[in-house]
Image (cartoon, rainbow, N blue to C red; front, side):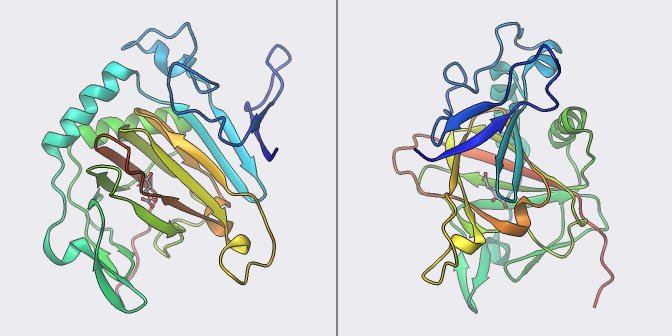
Length: 259
Ligand SMILES: O=C(O)CCC(=O)C(=O)O
């Protein structure tokens, strides 16, 4: 059975040893499987911040950390606020260029961030909208949990399991070199798929097992360097997924000189 390592960070002498997990064991259910929140956690209190443990997800060149960041009550409320407050791009900004051809993206998208920044993705340059309170609150919680600051967020809304995002790396030149990307999810739990670059396509030079996670309501996936150098990620279609999902990827972006 293929395996990958899920370790706890910096094991102290009283902590459990690394967990050896079977692929597919990262169950999305909050209340079942290895990703369940600890029993001590009190929904809606600061205890949720300290008690939800990080799970380390490691493979060759892949370095990610996952945790439940928000209690269910908090996550439900934030999801509702995002539905009411976030204004998605319209018109030309809903299209991307793939191999020279323009396509409508199979989801809704928008960027928010510091005013001087821009972000070019699949042939389109995005100017961020100014921060709104709900995004600042999520951003602050991410900073508290990770110790990293972020000045930009890309938001993707998937109306159902047919909406998706294709395989790509987050390797845009505007990203601060070696900075992590913090991916926060609300709504329907979705499969999230990592594939090593050397294992892609007909001319794959080797076989490295893909890694599949399920990103739960209120969760945070921290993609650390060098994950995006070697690994592509995607959110595949899953027809049985019943409802919408909103994903926010917080990034550290540099202001680039205009060409
Ligand atoms: O929705 C997701 O979890 C993935 C989003 C993503 O791949 C991206 O923003 O680059």
